[in-house]
Length: 196
Ligand code: G4P
Image (tube, rainbow, N blue to C red; front, side, top):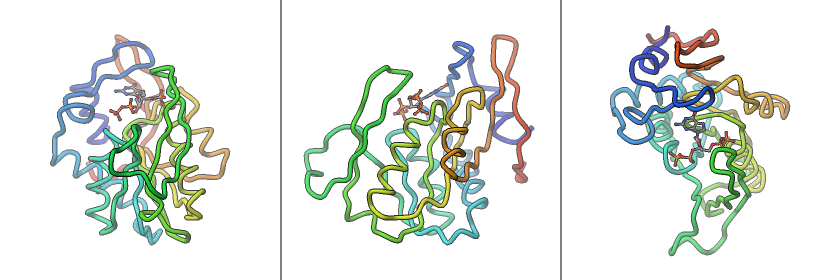
């Protein structure tokens, strides 16, 4: 078991066969040293890709993205889900449907923070149906930048997000890949994490 799988088993709560609560270290309280380890692991996998920018989405993607950005020494931009008072000009937007909340949100970034030709690593905390990931990919494509790949903290491999991204030719690196979860426990797919 890698360091994240172990933490998920110790602190994660399976609320339903498709919903995992990890608010003690990702979605509400953040364990900074642990999050740094996650960011470093994602960064390590993309070290050779000459990443120039990391893109994530508020709110829970920000922490792992910042630590990966620290490691790769590149800026981190987070897409906003709500309209900002100060962020009004030069926006790039895309629509994201949330299966969990059953609502559509328009996500946005300022085009001055993502330029054509940049090499972008997209990071998020969960990969479920891949809607957020695809919305972020659309922002990168609209900016004329290149998607080097995705760095995901927890992938729910029994949902179709990874397949949607792979079908589009994107590289997906997830630190924990859950194949099944229920009241009896959580099963992971084989992981390639080396820093235990
Ligand atoms: P998708 O983006 O992959 O299509 O997934 P979906 O619409 O189902 O997810 C919407 C929100 O729910 C996202 O966070 C996503 O990270 C989160 N999520 C999906 N599955 C789980 C799960 O099993 N456990 C937890 N804890 N979160 C899950 P969000 O609403 O944007 O929240 P936040 O980033 O502001 O914290």
